[in-house]
Length: 447
Image 1 (spheres, rainbow, N blue to C red):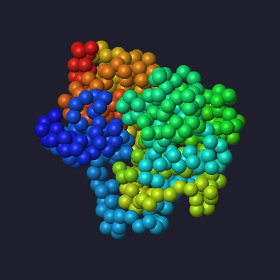
Image 2: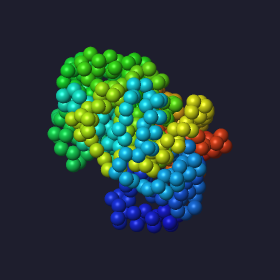
Image 3: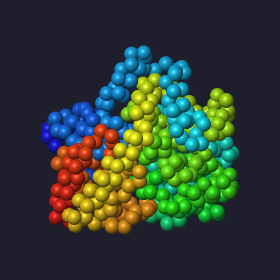
Image 4: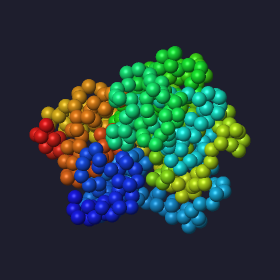
């Protein structure tokens, strides 16, 4: 990096812990100085030194139409001219809620919040309030935000920083583990906060002695996208639905990443399994802070002010965010997703060829419009243990820097998905594949 990136990062470190406002943005796992972005346009990011990068992060999935999209920008200009926040109901939140509910099966109502973390923790509170139970089940490698009860065996930035499950003495999860015999995945989280958390291996339906009548809910990413992209194996989600029904537990799909990204609606329309509660984020905010949780009316009516489960937020349903979100969803029709799926299919095939031809042992996995790379294995990755083993090879960091030198911005950590967006042209993706071939060859030479 040139001087300005170094200077800005030095300034950031003086006033922001670690120089970043989210650990996943740091270069801790890949080394070097983070790129400080000046602006973005379409498929590109431009740093403070004026370098241009093809952006494969796309704000971790929040930007599907590209940076500074004219339609979103126009909607924001119109909204901001009327005021930025009111603390009262607005038309925009109603219109966006109607659009989401019209697309998503089994979702009659939604409550807007400002982040995916809020959506997940509120969904769990609702499930506990409805069932009168305390225990919840999550799956190793699935990340549901940074609320205390969910910071155990998480993927994404928690895994990247080497924090996830740090108190268990092992990164492996071969059977369900009922806490508190294991510590949380972060300092500052009381053991009591995760004492009702049960961790199970992803892609395995918990046994009857684990998923029993004491469990309030099972929360899962229907397509894991925070330990790389790990699709559900056949029968996994259907088995969760059946098991939850058998004991009266609620099934929560965390579709903060997959919602309106893998399809016109969400992952449940592909897998054919309808949960009791959904969590959405990323795409529905159009690049602004917005998320939601929703489900059947009979469940959502348990929320205050009509029910006993309290949840609130001053900026929830912010008029700027709802305007941006509605602008995005209005343009994401079936044809748009068909085009995006075609781009991803071609890109995945090209990326796999680039890695394999260079002699790198690697597998590229994808589901719908999501994809990611796993180095050090040619086998399908189906759980957190395998994803962690791939990350531990250290190959990703080498490949990452070769790509960065070639003008391609990948996520600075091996547990993240790559996001191909509608702003990526065929030429853009061809360029990424060209750089991938070069980067793969350089990486293979130094293994």
